[in-house]
Amino acid sequence: MNQPRGIYDSERACLPRPVRRERTRVLSLQLRQLLDAGLELLFPSRCAGCQRVDTVWCPECQCLLDAIPFPARQVHALDPFTALACSGEHRGLLRQALLALKYENAAQLAGPLGNRLADLVASLQWETDFLVPVPLHPSRERERGYNQTRLLGQVLARKLWIPLADDALYRTENTRAQVGLTRRQRLQNVSDAFVVNPGRVQGCDLLLVDDVYTTGATLGECARALLATGARSVFGLTLTSAVSPANHGGGTPEWM
Ligand SMILES: [Zn+2]
Image (cartoon, rainbow, N blue to C red; front, side):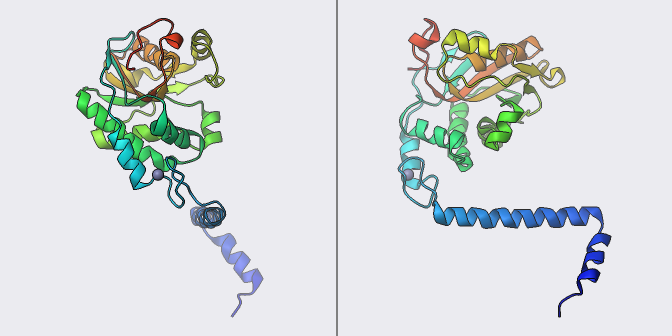
């Protein structure tokens, strides 16, 4: 039997605020799931590596990813880092997976890519107190819905049992995207873009994580800010490196 409308409304109005809030949350979650299911029917997921339908990352591409060796050479003591490493060149399957994670809403790819980073760090035997992901500006993170570097960091932190210090480093300047800028422009673009929480980093050895190393401008600026605020050492880690002698200001081509 239908509930008389007036009674139902007055009953709902009497519900405690937390219960009403929880109802609204559950309803919006269900609506979101319904929308996702509809979108999945209209636009099925495709593997970021081979475009196979119905998955964002297939077992075959995982095997191919596992077969990509880590770079034979790792840089040590490249100022301001105690050590710096990347898990591979910014090309092929690794690049495709990273771009899908970053620009195509394929957050699930943080799993396999984060596992790859964890294997690399384990092989390097770095000893650090905290893991610090390079932050996005809050407005850019809202736009994307997540920070891909933090997602990678969360997988790394779980695998390596290192705490993730999400409140150590903040991006206060909404800098323009670094793509297409020269090394000098990139350095200017990120200059003073980060603020450090001193209580979080003083005397600590930090593992600073970013997705891609291009000229090192962003990673270097973060490391300098962390060290200037009292961090004891900063180890830099990226998933890929697009560095070349030409765009590294004449420096050594680190891992290529
Ligand atoms: Zn695939």
